Image 1 (cartoon, one colour):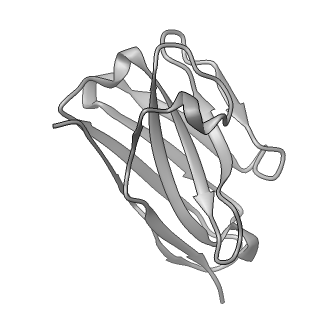
Image 2: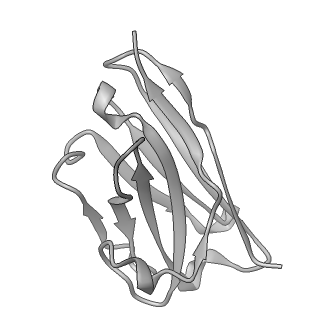
Length: 124
């Protein structure tokens, strides 16, 4: 059974940091590219960051460049999203998704497996 599980969300003050994890079970992530997406209340889901398989080319939405960093640890079968300088507008449910082979960017049809999401709330 192929599964992605996100963790690490929570409540944080503006300017704070969180690290989200995306752990895979039932398959190994090293052949997959991983994307992080988010959906805020009343808004469409949007791409945040992605990392390709192989050498790990990274890609970021303009809204998070310089603040978020995506990384992968194939030995742990996990991808991380390090989020710094968080803003209230970063509040959303964050999802990770896996796409087989080389995927870069946020075309959702290229991602075959999705997690259930983790809530991130940025508020004072």
